[in-house]
Amino acid sequence: MLPAAHRMRRSADFQQTVRRGARGGRDTLVVHLTTTTDPGPPVVGLVVSKAVGNAVTRNRVRRRLRALLASRLGRWGSGTRVVVRAQPDAAGASSAQLGRDLDGAIDGAERRAARRAEHRVTS
Image (cartoon, rainbow, N blue to C red; front, side, top):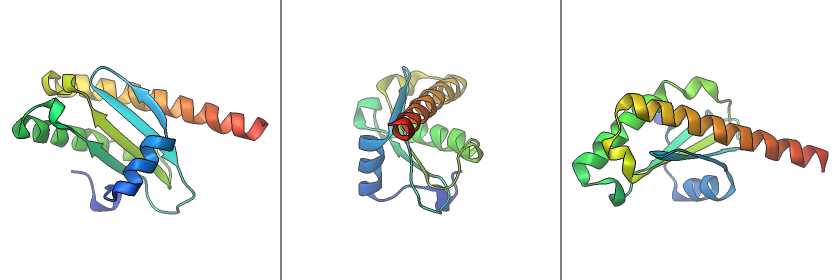
């Protein structure tokens, strides 16, 4: 279960993270990651649309992603915001596949965020 302090709730936070964050994607999901100057803990939000499936399927995907993200919270520092958007292929993926795709997408987003930060420093 994802602790309450680490859940993103405000739509403005989702929008800002998706628009300004670095993106990493795989077949089953897309990760948007941004860092802020907030002293708070890392915050995670999930987007599982109707394109993924019916309510039962969406909730199953959501539960799996929450469990996977809870085990990965330690990899981010304070002020980090992450939005995970499930793709339709997430409905048929196993938890192991979702975990591999999540790690790959996070790695890609972190690499892009690091390149952006490096570019800002050198500019």
